[in-house]
Image (cartoon, rainbow, N blue to C red; front, side, top):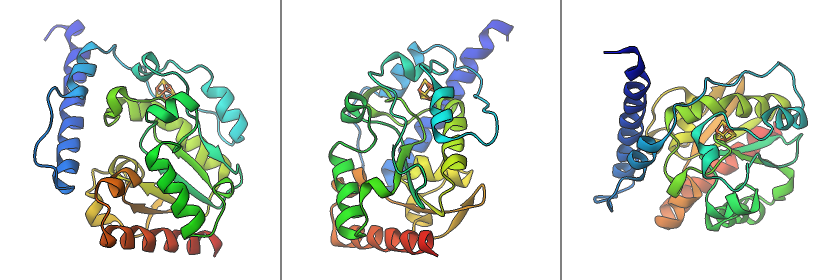
Length: 243
Ligand code: SF4
């Protein structure tokens, strides 16, 4: 293969891996058919090759991590965003929530989890756990909205993860809740099935991680059983963050 063709081969491998992960997640969640076309394939085909993963100096404050991010154009997700959705909440929070990526409302407002799924998450935090949303910290594994809300591609996640790592290091939470498969897979370092790992403790850079369902999934599958499971996971995470 000619040297100049390699970036496209890498791009294709990333798309296949992301598509497979998405299909596995959809199957887990009981989705049996999909509307065409596949957004991830279209987007990746039109995308430019991603930049190398960012590297941050150690021991930055949250503000410094945000400054380092700047008007980031390190991956293709910058192309369609309205705003960079960095994070929201207490910079010294004991409990941190990490989701997948901003949706349409989040992109418009520049804040994470403010659309319908975010409203559910806020209710779970405030009414369920009895904690103000402003007392926890909420962010995503990528800071820019993926087109059509597709799952972020592996190279996009890899490029953006230095900023999530910087946020975790600066905040130093006592517990992290990973919301949904992409966030949990990144923090656990392997491709996971959320139905199998939710409710169990893991570790990311010395911080306990509790994977649970994404609130968007709960909205789609609003069953008493799913709500009970998420409630148990969030309660365990809150207790751990207070220990
Ligand atoms: S998703 Fe992250 S790495 Fe990509 S452009 Fe946005 S901030 Fe930069």
